[in-house]
Image (cartoon, rainbow, N blue to C red; front, side, top):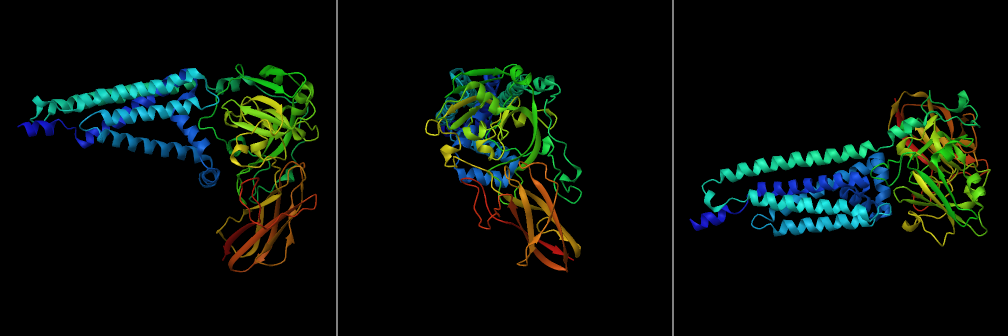
Length: 515
């Protein structure tokens, strides 16, 4: 009888694993609820995810962007969730006889959350309340469920009352965690930027960009439209959750090596004469033939004007910009302050206020430079400094200090490995050399002679150009290669280089079949 009692006092494997997962859910929900009252990035789940992004090796980040594209963060979050659920279940199973192993695991997880929040540059000390709440809730729920789940000696004969009690308690935890999590999400959403963006209204530039000519693209043949719709504009950043910044809360500080430190609110920017420019942007993570290149009409003010008003001191080299989520970027002052470059503090995109995911209320756009040194979204701070004094996010991860966009071209049709009718076959795509402009694009079939293509009308030197050419091809397998020459006379190299440290190089090659 004593042996039966001792055996009955051990929690079953399934129940033990479940109580670990339920404790995890309670911890995350409590942390998310408290974070919603402070800053949603204080949510331990998001803070650990952001910390993982910051600690991930550059090569692995680059692989994630190439492989998963805009879903790279979703993959990270799902992967984290899977690992945490498994770890919680194992901690519960390890606690079948005693709650100590599970309690220790929860404390360790909690400390990781506290450390992750403490390391976030965009969070203050009060944000630590979120992981602390998570730790306390997880521990309390685990210990309570463990006591409920463990059969008592007087219930040896089947232990049914204990099982029912555990199911009722577990259901209560599920409901409580669900309410807390949903409440946190609702509170975070109640302070989102969507209503603030809607209240901005129409942005009417005093200087509009020239109209896009009808022959600026070959979209009917298969190239992109000249202007990329906002919903299709590429997005690459480190933000796990899109920052929600309202215009009424936003301000921009300009300081450092300047004569007059300045601070601007949204109205200060909005009420200035606005300028509109058509600009093609490219991400340094864009592989040869990749999709991380897009074009839009940006509306804002000249960054050169802001810097001139502040009075940049001699010796300044870097415009060190900071996003509301703590991400940092270093841009050459020479590029930012050059009126001929057209660098902007942008507040609009394609005829509407910036989309939230593209930096609302304001972002930087410096033509001709890869995004990691030119395109800070949700920007709140500009410090004029030197390269030695401050090192930006990607510079700390061995990317290049200077990053002018490289001359590149891409084949958009036919698609790789597509089968098309033999005979007259059109091949086309895009090319870009921001700041210089595309002079010509050439294509060849196999190792045949290079043939010059038909180019679309040039809009300006800071935007892409479309191209196409027609070949007479028999039935069979074919390989087509393209290369671009910019207006400086430079023809892109065939030497394949990866994206690190300053952008990919090489010719885009596709294979397809005719029949």
